[in-house]
Image 1: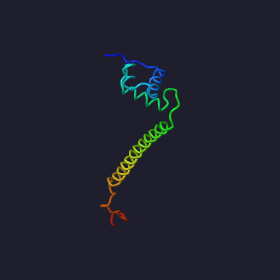
Image 2 (image 1 turned 60 degrees about the vertical axis):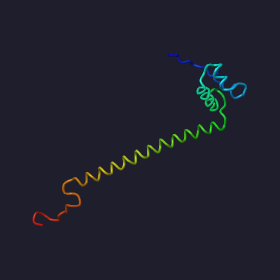
Image 3 (image 1 turned 90 degrees about the vertical axis):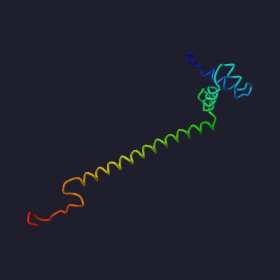
Image 4 (image 1 turned 180 degrees about the vertical axis):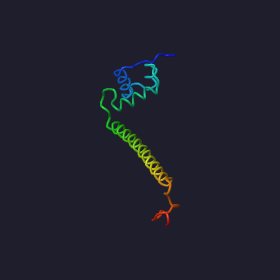
Length: 117
């Protein structure tokens, strides 16, 4: 099994900038640096987002913000549904306790007097 390699930020930035400049094709870069095409495109996405000590492009920064906001909306939606179910379960249990008490519920009539009523 091959040992996992670590690449420096400078190396990644150099390879991606070479790709973006158009001087080398992706397949050439992959062969030259012995990296997979998936890794090259992963680095490209990171570069566009500004993860290699460079300025992110405006479009990429907005896309990343949208992604974070969508994740937040998803978490909040799940939390809302969870709380809604918990409230409904609590209300159902409260109704069940009221009707299970002796002398309460729709079948029992409350008497107004003593033993001779």
